[in-house]
Length: 373
Ligand SMILES: *Cc1c(COP(=O)(O)O)cnc(C)c1O
Image: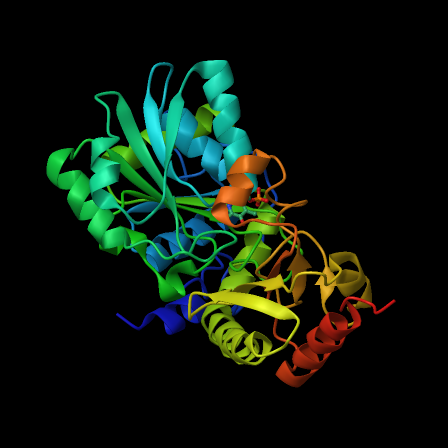
């Protein structure tokens, strides 16, 4: 079998049944598929269940994460909902790492309030403490690494080993949006489920809203399939086709995101306006604290190349203020305890020229310094 980069580029080519010789796969919009006869199927019956275009994407997602099956769904939140609605019910308990996507916390709080699926948080570091927090009702452990936005790295393999040694029934689910399978493949480290907001790096161009779930075993896959057929939050054919196209460049994009992020992480850390910089060492996400007295608003208004916007993972560099944007639904005390302060800036480093990015951020930071009276 050819290697991953080749599979991503060539793996779905030549699949045009019409024998036109088209190099890239066709896009099928049909929602209904004719049956050859009673009890017979082409493999496609109705679009909520599966479409040819989505099937190709799911084949690529499965391959990327090293699972047995994948589902392309309508957003990252739909992917999270697919996992929780499939595997948890009233009275269950789960544990989530404490520093993760704010929308996930909003979802967890809703599940707790409406369905009494309780959860505890964990700092991502002390595994003994995690084991002590397990309850007989614990169904699932939800992890995001590196954490969002403070870039704490969790040892996924150590967590999976320790938990499965005492409780093989507990599912380890990882939101792998930040690193992507190019840098981290949780299923190969012992996790059971991987989730993506494919809106971010997998899509990579700020033009597709999508999510993905990948399963490690056939039993998990069967449960997810049945739930998705019931609830129907599937990805539409055109987004699926665009995402297939994006995946072809995932490896080169991630390498370039890392190169630019490493460059900026090094240079920005030395600026007088930067109190502290956080970076996991790979991937395109960095965070930093503007020094005390520096105006966040002036900094944001001064950006010319980077966009002040609420997303990540695209070729365009995006700057976010987690305290008032992505993480605002988290209680203030919890935000402060995690280090999410009003001065914390998160940068999704894009693929523009590295010197232009550095110059833009440097001038915007200098411009934001406290004014002398
Ligand atoms: C954006 C994001 C989500 C939610 O995904 P949507 O595609 O916006 O629904 C989930 N997890 C992480 C880490 C994200 O960044």
